[in-house]
Amino acid sequence: MIQCKRVYEQASSEDGYRVLVDRLWPRGVKKTDLAFNEWCKALTPSSELRKAYHGETIDFAAFSEAYREELAQHREEGQRLAALAKKQTLTLLYGAKDTQQNHARVLADWLRHLTVS
Image (cartoon, rainbow, N blue to C red; front, top):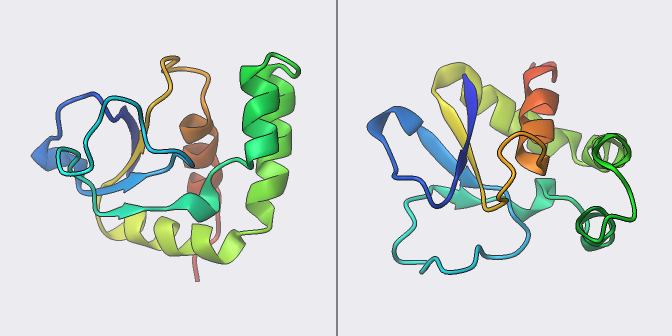
């Protein structure tokens, strides 16, 4: 199972393996206060793509498509996390305010559709 959760939400025993998937450390959160197992920068949107989306140069549909193209370059890393998700709950942690349209949701969907060998 793969789920997404804001870093500002309380950690839970049901979260399983917690992975921070933001390129930048979330504002207002001390590194010592965040319960996470790893910080996976390899599967985050590029700085250029992130800035284009947050600067409203592109909409969410264009962002999602471009992000999936970037993710295709990191398939091996994605397969590692997808394999983890087959054994235990995988929680993708993000800092975005929008809980419906954000990169963690795109990443979760991409991971769910990866073929794990």
